[in-house]
Length: 357
Image 1 (cartoon, rainbow, N blue to C red):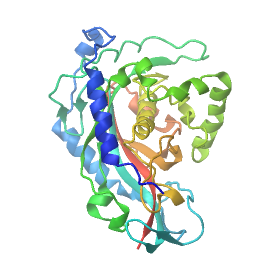
Image 2 (cartoon, rainbow, N blue to C red):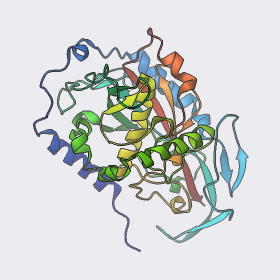
Image 3 (tube, helix red, strand yellow):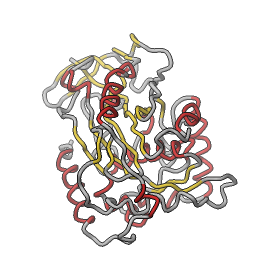
Image 4 (cartoon, rainbow, N blue to C red):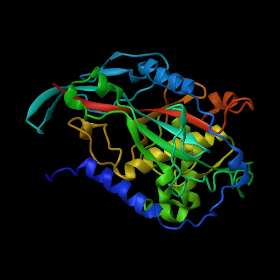
């Protein structure tokens, strides 16, 4: 078996490529729309405190926990599925041959901020003091917000957002529940932001990362997303339908614009899209199933049932939800006019299978 590609090399290459492309002249105007120019970040230090407290006080989302295939701990309302065989023991050969026991839980991996104000980051309670990159002027952020999509049979508007992905590997930092051998050492940091990613600003450039989108851009493939929507709302999404995100139609393209009926639904859809995009860029890897017992592995086509997300800002919905599940349970609160609708932050959990010894 060949050696696995180095994850750090892939990540660095992706960042360098994005920076190179960001120096290319943008196809957008050099001036931000008036609606965006009037928008302010509004993030305060108190917001950062709230978010970090929420991320740490909702760690019960790791449940249920399975040891040797047997569920030993659970919390009401937190869903799970069996992702490995019923054999309780496992064998890993790398870095040294060893025998262990299978452990399965939901691991907190990070946080995603979806914003209409570039470089605005409530996780640090401020606006990041930089002004470069093709998304720095927020060009296109509100351009499509008042238009409606045709042929949908409903009032769906086009909205656009910038995104930040933060690594937050709490379990690895605290060495909780799983043997340390199951984790890749890492700290808390801003792993990716869309403002410097040229492909995020344009559907055309996004095709570099998702050329297969043309294969599923047909009525038959999109009708199949209705099946995925039903599955996501009553359990977990269907991984073979990788182009669907349940109640939010297609995950493509990997760019800033999305068709949505409400801001929060659009923000959740963008957060889910980013997870897939980062898988395609090699920045997120697979961690579930028999293949994940001995370590992470490349997963360019995501297994969306591996993830669960929930909002932590500006309001908290404290239990993770599967990818593609309808946001109806928190739509009303998020769309009250008094609430801050320009930015939202979501906690990201992933299912983790591990051979602990």
